Each structure stands twice: as structure tokens, then as C-alpha cells.
Image 1 (spheres, rainbow, N blue to C red):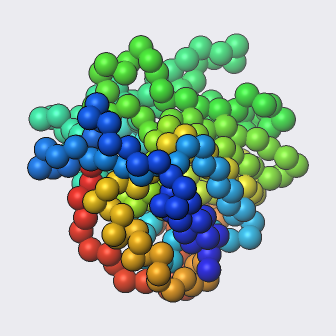
Image 2 (tube, rainbow, N blue to C red; image 1 turned 90 degrees about the horizontal axis):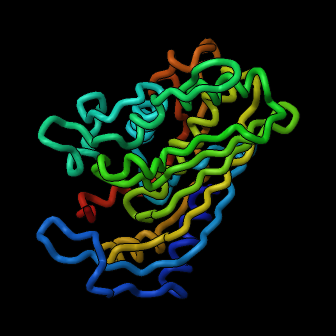
Length: 276
């Protein structure tokens, strides 16, 4: 059983066994047919993944790791808010007629801010500090910009990263206000672990621990039977995920920079509805 399996299974079991069922009529999310999407939720979930031990890739079902990396690069590297710059279609439901999700996610990463050393956007400031100020306790990003929320098609879910260097080890905290456990949990964990590997490599560091803090971890009502079936499945050892050592510039990474070996996993669960 991989670290990702253990965290996913334990969190889902805790939600199902001890969580609160939300049936408030003021609930915002809905299913494609217009029905209100209710949840069973747990507040304040914290999971830890040590990348020095293994890469956190779920095995109870397959995760499209290449697409997950493509999305995090869309945000952190391309700094784009256009779904036309994304290879998958996971954001299509939130895009406008021009394919834009507004001033959300990648847009916020690309906004430049003034520092004493000059102007940096959030990605470039992290890269600068990891190389020049590794002892800093101020290496962080935040895309939950209150001034721009009215121009975002979806408020950021995973909204903040805090980086901390100890010796030659890069650790990080991912803060998430809301987490759809079936649709997004394993995907987010894998892509931000991949981001840590990329940032560490170009900064002369080694990726260490990813701490994932979730304010509202939930399973949607129509997802409960799927999750319950997943919890009965066999688990496998974590695959080996490596990064092309020749890449030294963050902006040169692609999903193909990663190699996933020995990825044994359960069957694909098939298409399921996503609440919007």
C-alpha cells in the first residue's frame, strides 16, 4: 500500500464514518442536471507525504499523472487562465465562451509584485528565494486574491503554498479550502508533489515532505457508492517517479520530463459526474 493509498483510504473512511452530512438548501454546487450536490464532509484534514520515501501516487485506481502535471504547469509555468493552453478538459465546465476562467489560478501566479530586489511574479519569486534566500520563512504563494474574486469563474480551491528549506531539503505545505475527495484528492497530491520535485531540482535541493491541509474534505452524495467500492480494493506498492536530471530551468519542464515506472494499480472507475 502506497502512502497515497493510506492517506486516501483513511480520510475517506473518516468522512464516511465520522463526517457530517450537509443537506442545507443554500448549498451552492449542483450536478449537471441542476440537482443540488450535497456532501458528507470532515473539517480540518491534514495528510503528510514524505517524497524521500516514495512518490504519492494512488494505486487503488489509476491517476493520469501526465495530465495532472500538465495542469500544475499550466498554472505555475504558463500562468494561463485559458483552457486552450491545457491538454485536458477538466476546466471546460468553468470556462466562458472564449475558454477563459477569468482572473483565477494561473493569472494570479503571473501578476508581478514589487520587492526590494525588483519586480517578480509569484513563481519567479519562489525560484529566486529558493536559490538566494533558502533560510527565509517567507517563501510562499497565495492566489486567493479577494480583489479579483468577482472576475474568477471559480474561487481557488488549492490556494496557497508555503515552502521551507531545511539543509538541502525542500518541504512544503499545500493549503486547500475545499477538496472533492473522489475527483481531485489524488490528482492534487500527485501534481503538487511533482511541483516540489521540479522546484527542488532547479534550486539544487531535494524534495522532502509535502503537508496537505484541507479545510473541508468531502465526498459528494452521488460519489459515495464509488468511494465505498474503492475502499474494498487491493492496494499496491508506490511506483517509482523520477525527473529528467538534465532540466535545470523550471520553464523547460514538460509532463514528459517525468518517468513513472512499475505503476501497478486497480481498474479505472469509469466516467462519473463532477459537481459544479
